[in-house]
Structure formats: C-alpha cells, structure tokens
Length: 158
Image (cartoon, rainbow, N blue to C red; front, side, top):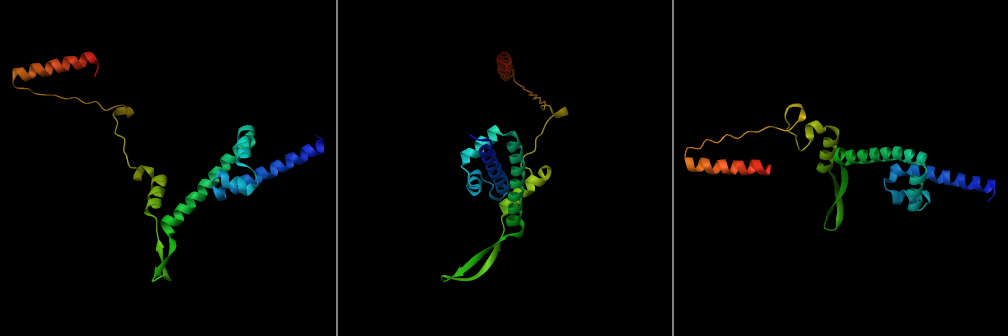
C-alpha cells in the first residue's frame, strides 16, 4: 500500500473517531452512536482496545454523556413533561407530568449523606460493634443446659 493511500485511510479513520466521540454524548449508546458515525460497533471496540488516546477520549465522552442523562433526568423530574389529554377520542388539552422516581435518584446522587437508604452502624474506628449478652438463670437445670450450649459453641467457634 502506498504512503499516500495509507495516510488517506488514517485520515478517514481519525475522522470517524472524531464523529463517534462527538456524537456519543447525544446518543449515550454505542450501537446508535456507531451507526451515526458511519462505523460498525465492532470497530469501536477495536479502537477502544488498540488506541489508548481514543480510550481516554471516550472516557471524556462518557462523562459528557452522563451529564446529558442527568440533564434529562432533571428536566423530567423537576420541570416535567407535557402529555396530551384526550376526551372522546379527540385531544382536548395537555397536562404536565413529573417523575418522582427521577427526582429521588437525583437527590440520592447529589446528596447521598442525606438521602441514602441505608446507614452503616459501626463501632469505634469503623470496626465491628461489640455485643454482650448476660442471662440470669434462677434454676440449676436451665443454668446447666445453657452452660453446655455455651461450651459447644465455644468449641465450634460460633
């Protein structure tokens, strides 16, 4: 292959990579972006594996894609979307609907310390909690039975 032809192929490949990286934040999906960039999705995965610069640029494109998705979640959760209202088969107006689920997701993502679902309870320095159980037994038979159970659990390491 001649040098000129090789340069032309490289130039075209670079052009396709730029198109892909430019469009990814809009589509947020490899398949759709590859189609819009005029390449096969397997080509994208080959570039990702073989071209370190492309892989780094794709990480930036993914961050921009997440921003796109967050903006859409905000729009639907906070600003709402207009949905048509029909009466007797005809459109008679519209209503604004909001997504409580998206709003919750945004709150959890942006203020996890306040809106997370679980709270971890730990002992000093983040270690495990220590617990102790004291049983007061008044009759000798029950005390002996508990003593035997305690011995067995000590031996078994439970």
